[in-house]
Length: 596
Image (tube, rainbow, N blue to C red; front, side, top):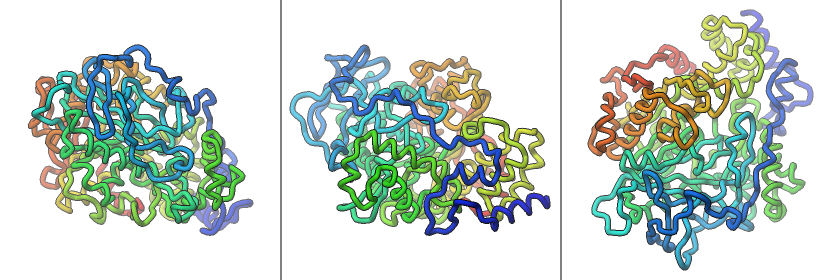
């Protein structure tokens, strides 16, 4: 233990060549920093980029093919004009519906604009291009084939037995999905998020949206919106999509007064922000937060501007020269974003490296960190909330970053760099539990506990104390098909981050996954829980249960409260309510009080 103490002192007080450790300092090269501290550092310093992505594909190139071509599909009249969709297996589908004007040209770094009305019938029978992004790391095969700055579209799924050609007597609840992807990747049209099955079997209208990502959605170059990029555009896009839903979803059979927003990872962060933002309050009724990384901090304005300056240097523009920045091609913006993403803005907020681009605390739209807002009650407490994690969230992140075994010494360096003066207590807590020479398993568990599970538990308990209605889960199922884990070998045989998604959407068949009969039952039950939540704000009331869901015989999911013994739903092939299995570990993290 004397070695650990010495190492902490070394990190705290030894000058590191080439690095500036003051708040006024420049961007820090994370990989270089760690390599100086420990030469055996194993993180890639340069991101992997898939060069086969097609940029700015014009609509004419994306002609509908196969199942997307349906000239006889349903036609509805929105506020902006008529839209024709497709009638596919299980659902009517409207792909690529514009909810805001294209954020291109002079509108690149501007708030979303209303859609201009159109003449004739809009073709909503095929997905549009995803927002600008590049593939990084080991999941490049999941990158959208077409990306464009013109990407503010949403998809709508309506149960197939709903007749959209006649007046509707009963409106259906609406589920609005916000995809994850670290705010730099992802797409609403990913097969994993195919909303047909969730819509049909739960009798809900499902909506999925795209929103601006990376530098396109979150660049900050100054404070004046007339002369600079002021950031958080991706969150404003989401608000615009939610407003579009309020104004238009009724013609698709949806009830604008019964909107649930749900998302995973960065999508869950987005949901949490909308729960905190006063301007989003009238746009939805309740929320589901899947694997929200509570302890990854949003940037301060100071750090967001520093990131913007680093971005501008990569483009040979001045950060104050918006005209120069606007003149850049989309490819140039993306290239500068990728080069900047290998940097760390604030060495004293080490975990920001896991989310270089994303929302920042601007003091107006976003006023504080999510875990802080939940703890202090600065959110829409009257709205029911369902939140949870997977049991092994950290495996995806740790094994993707560290592609070789990590020794005890190396793991000590990383933990000390992240947790500073708290490192000794954390090492004392975790080191005795992990005896393998490869300490990646220990690091993965620390990531799971500190970033996801324990701050979620603390937020839930604070919400309960404030009188809110909360339900919690842990997705604890391990599948035998590694493709469920995005084809990542290190997620094989683990309940990784995002592992619940094909089960919630019941999308295994279209996402090319195989499921055993018990897994199909689990997927059916999870779909029904999420659907029941949309109907009633309680996953166990059975108030809006369909015949399909009645056949699944859902186990009772108790509300999270001290009177119920703080029971959470363990979602696995034998789903059941249980007391939190890592409560003693979360008690430890709560006492450290370092979530924000």
